[in-house]
Length: 257
Length: 381
Image 1: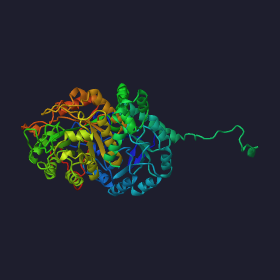
Image 2 (image 1 turned 180 degrees about the vertical axis):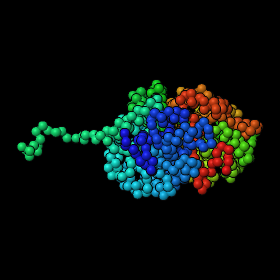
Image 3 (image 1 turned 45 degrees about the vertical axis):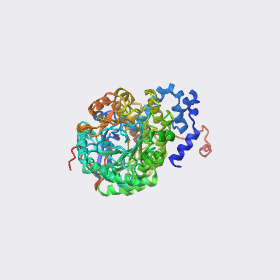
């Protein structure tokens, strides 16, 4: 299928991005990446121990076949996110970054205002910036303006597995924003991912649902298939679902009599 | 409303009798809910809830996996000094006990830190007895400055400080702090702390809040189980955690549930807490506060700790010593007896066997110009 996704000048075949926290062992990650087919893998810089051997998560990500996207987990404001991104790049993690600015530990909802500020600074420094955001049209427009390479609205709160609770808001972003819209967070089942893709999302990012499954590699493959199915459905043009019944004797039938 | 005021209100509202009147139906209703109120939390601490421990455990594990994954953060304590100005009736380090007192020089602390870092641990907790005179903030800052080369995260468990003092320590490289109220019941507190600065119940109670205000990233609180009646102590501690998380949503709040252990002296534990009660407390806390960090220390025996993994625990100590200079083969007495003597490697293997990832690093220091004061395990610059 020739349907590439281009972000930051890189052409991607896979529309499933993978998060690496929460797995029962880092050693499982290569198999999960293989079965998911993911080409973009995000890692929290706070979890990376550059000195360690066995416990260094970076040793489990084959960067010849995957783009490493460090994330700024732990940042409470734009300044901290910018610092984390710079540390990651200086340590050789490349120039992709997922901005995550969260200052509410109860719901883990992102702070769009601080995210926009960090995006502007980092895009100006040559980073390929993918900001995690609450789906809000004005904020998404500001992120486009700030130089983001894509926008990543949450489907529902991180780790909630509740699916596309923000569907209507995300649909507006897909309709209005020129950049790829990648649904990040809250997708608990492959069917949720398929739903996001059918709606026209450019990609999805999944972590918790795969990492905490009984069989993480198996679930990774299930998500991969669901993402492809959803994408194919979108491209094939799913018929509109009508909210109204079609009466057998239409009210406007007389016009054609 | 300050937490002190909230606690006073709750003590009037929920008498010990209240918990005894909880019925099975009340517990079942709570278990069907997604979000628990303070009243629901108390219901889960009742005797009636004891029958529902398995249901609580299943729910607690699912919530913990969802929010923290199948991962446990490892850390270790480093005792800098055991000088103390208090007279806590239940503690080995208290001023009246004739024990061998010691204080590490910052260089000795660095030597011990280097040994710890070689085990792969990147989260360190620095402890002292409660003596401003022997271990002033300036001394703590010196130690932190030397140790921060080796660790990604440095926490402190020292005497209660002012907000300004916490700011100074954050500037030096401290990112987390622990302070135990020990006992939330103010009458028992007064009785057990007859002398010394620790007599000030309210100053201690408001310590974690001052740390949050100073900008600490992670704050850990808890009762010392065994000093006051269960389940009240767990209830107040849970409310305290919820209070802090609500007011300081950007701070990672955690709770520990240490139980009183044998020590030097002759204090008799009046309110012993069984394994069953400890598990009930842990599960009730997880269901009440799904995102709360929960720590279990090496005070507990290995077999019990292994079984608690998977019930909601998110942090564990490993390779611990409660002696000053414990890893430098120096002579001093321990604060309390450890029950789990396993090495970091043994804990690591145990977690893998149980299907959990041992996390050695879950923080990256943001100090310094580009943010990285941490030079890695070798302390290289």
